[in-house]
Length: 85
Image 1: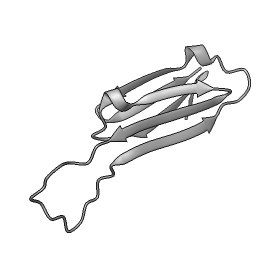
Image 2: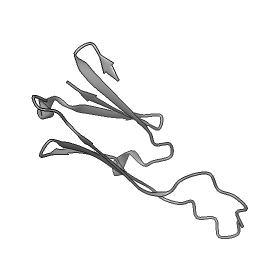
Image 3: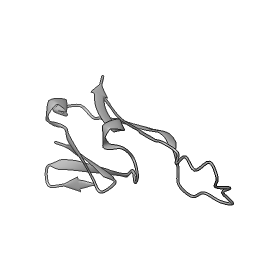
């Protein structure tokens, strides 16, 4: 969404280790990647599992005139927030 003079992008990443979250900008493309490890419960036999695990990756092409050095990101309570000036 656009707020005043900047954009805010949010991604719900519940249960993701903050150390696995990466936000990178290269050649005008913003890349968000993360990894969520599956729970190891050897004795459990799941009938259904609604939680994702594995790799997460999204890319967004940025427009011209974006100050990529000023892009910031925070990860709090399972939500990644990226601010693009």
